[in-house]
Image (tube, rainbow over all chains, first blue to last red; front, side, top):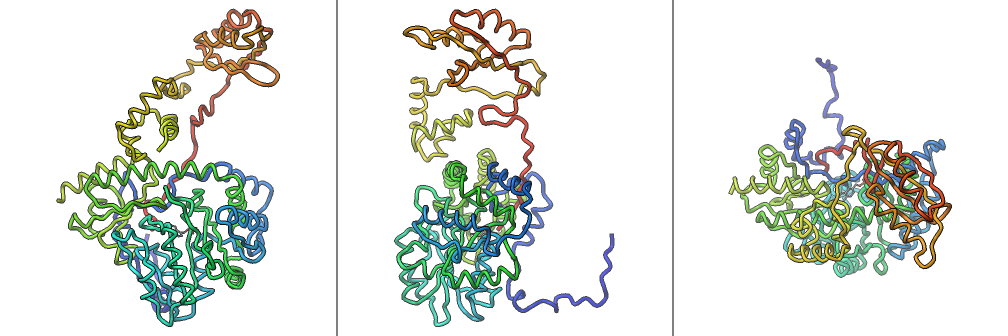
Length: 396
Length: 161
Ligand SMILES: Cc1ncc(COP(=O)(O)O)c(C=O)c1O
């Protein structure tokens, strides 16, 4: 079929400077190759391999049956905000007023965008560690702010250094964007380090925007909520979600918790751009908070088994692999193969049909690493290790 | 890693090898083997079995849930009669129940006739058994936490950043 284009397309001249300021993803070629192949073992995913627990799905179905198909309050259903408030109290001893300090969003994705739009003026700088989740720099740029990248290293366990943050501070610094447990490294920030970062934030009067979507997925270490550190609740926008812990990525639901002035500002934008998070997803989220704990525990136990098995497998192949204590990613160092991350990922895909994500997708300092998601079956993980091993011995 | 964790893993998947369990829990294979051997000796691990969907290979199996009422006996209570019953191969599962009857017995046979014979000729006449009610199983949807024919089709995108 031929498509007929109008002769005078506005084309790229129509695009805003803002959107043009975001660099296109460098791994397009890789995606195209992937799309053309069958029988690939994909370690390139970023979500659980579980479907949402039935009790949660069933609650959403029931809500639809009852005809709950209308908008909710802009902030989200009052019952859900109350339950969320209780949840944050139970988990971290934090008190958030469900009437004006919590906002139910379309995932952490929306919460992140709102947080930036509500707080960043053109030219404001947001300091963040890298390699980091792809949306972090983009969300700042879309608000005409400037992401300031502080590289983290395998040697420092991919933990952002408080002194590096301090060194990056300028008069234009507005906020620290923290994302631990981290995508793509699986790093978890120990409480000690967080206290030091909190101290930097306090001394330089910076806002902390904390993406804690992987909070429940930690192994052998306790997650510390940034807002729960002394004096931090008043300067932290806490973002949390349902996608990863409850295997609810497709529902598009999450939340932001913070000082009421900021939540009010975020709500203003949310009200004009989103109205409210999907009503049935809110019903599902409510059920998740009420009864989902056992499901979370079981999934976490299983991720932990796969994590240990996969990381030890990578090390046996000969990679240096930092021990990820959170999320569901391993971030092995592949530099010993002499290949760049992108070449490694491309060749591994075309020669052995295993998809991993080049570390450079998460920032320049991701060079030399690839992200592997171990939220897949043990048998697939084992097979992928066999293939990676064969690949490595062929190329070294 | 605790012994219970290993038991939970094996309960879900008896085919896991000791090496697999070791790498999955960050333990040595020797330790895992030792723990499993001990559990087998103590009959904590009773048996390794396979869950089969017999519907898929022709209906050569029939099951009935039989409610059994009994008169408890002096000193031995329900146990002596339960034992008489559970020693029959046909009785696949035997539970002592609270409520309106005493023993729940799952009986397996190749035909309904076979089960009926077992109930009328073996089970019902046992001394102390005062009544039985048999319910034939029409379909097995789920057993031991496993759904036989799952209709789920969750499919993920191959790469998400
Ligand atoms: C670190 C991080 N934050 C946020 C998100 C997006 O979460 P949500 O599904 O709640 O929008 C992801 C998803 O991959 C993520 O890895």
